[in-house]
Length: 164
Image (tube, rainbow, N blue to C red; front, side):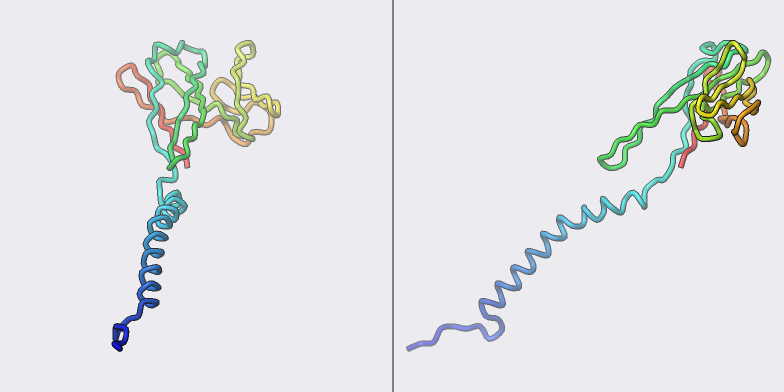
């Protein structure tokens, strides 16, 4: 009676173990590498932004009246989409380049408002006041209102927004 054929190198059980381990490793790599990349990519990606934002024509901003301009910046990070709201006060004076102030108080980052009656910026959080040039008049802010760097292109006004 003839004996069953047996491979001198590998038996059936060893072959199944090797094939199962190989297929399992390939499936783990196919699923695992994108997951690892998803978690690591924010650390390797761009951490801040550096943009010139158009505020439009200078004709939109009257002289001697700080005018609020609001804008949003949307960032996409993988599947996450986040939108940040910003504001800027544009102050034009006759014969001078415009000055653009951030609408964020330098004390605790509350939003300031222009008080036309008293001709000053008012922060409602801690009752801080800034004059028309952004200098601290009273209250707890440690420094004047931040100013944006500006660029004029014809009659178009741009501000330099940096974050991160």
